[in-house]
Length: 305
Image (cartoon, rainbow, N blue to C red):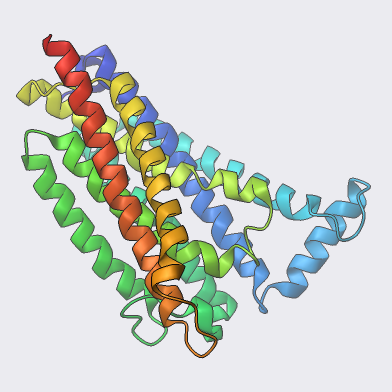
């Protein structure tokens, strides 16, 4: 494992990017867990006193959202600062083996599981396991949702490990991460947006979760490039990622438009609604992967010509 100063300048930049977004992801997961707990009945009284005190101190109306947003942002910045300082200390004074382990497998694991794990944990601590819409995670073993997350994360990590053995590490790994984050977006968003994420600032902050996974992927791909000569250009791949996201959004719009016609909603069952949601997720993944692949092939053809 090479020392930090022995790495090429581009790899060091990706390494720093990985550390920054890893810290932001931990900060967001911590603030997200706190917000979830305060939204549940175990934390309602504490939340009321905390938000009211902050609003009064800063001269805002009692029910203004300022107290909520201030608490979330302050918790996120505090946790991010602590995590960033810890990772920088490890990078500066830790052994190459420890530093490499933190920035590759540990960073990948946290990018995948930090926010969902904190969310599930906060639900259990805050008494939200009894709320039906928050207790529908597939294979939810009683109220032990963390076991279900561990089961899914194990499969994701195995797929990522297999993708790392392939020459085209970036493309295969990106599809796997896209599938993971799309599933959690599809699963988490409808059930909690009304109660927890109704403030736009809280919604915007959630982008650090996929950004952390993407920063890790850039870092490991840059390391892989030194071994295989794989063509990796961060600007080109970022453009293709945005193209893929736009194509995926188009696929979701198509599913939301056509799905209700093929599966009309029924007041007696949520089956048709769930089918349309699953169809939207599937088309998003297919269109996003296709858009990214076509964009990257186009860039490669330009480079060869």
